[in-house]
Length: 185
Image (tube, rainbow, N blue to C red):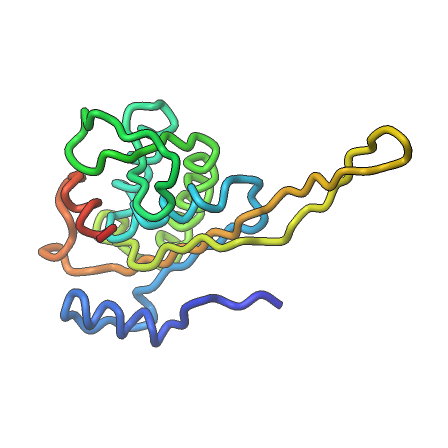
């Protein structure tokens, strides 16, 4: 059995500390995706980038990443990464992970349908918890000459998103790079 990495009580406490609002467990929507064959480092950075955005803003952002119009800022895994001339406002190290954005879009659409099923207002629903963790490792072996074999393993990623419905005055109005970079720091 797979467990959530965050409980409802922890989400309620997180919202209380960050937004100074008391919510109930009925205002929480969750979605998970398992065993995506994507880069776990890029998935962690993408989860960090969409945290504290509304569901619609996160979906639009992932669509822009898929179309190579907006990058994902890379904060933690920056070794041997290209530093760009920053045509966008913010962080100079960035990537355009299309497969990761596609996987996050699947989970975001699932989160949106879960939120609407629970009766939450989609426009006021903000992602408060986004995490990506390593899943199982797919083990393959490539046969070589003289009876040898080379391991050829592939990691998978589990994605977890939690959103809550907030009052309208606390919801971010529009997407901004400053908000993404502030959430990353």
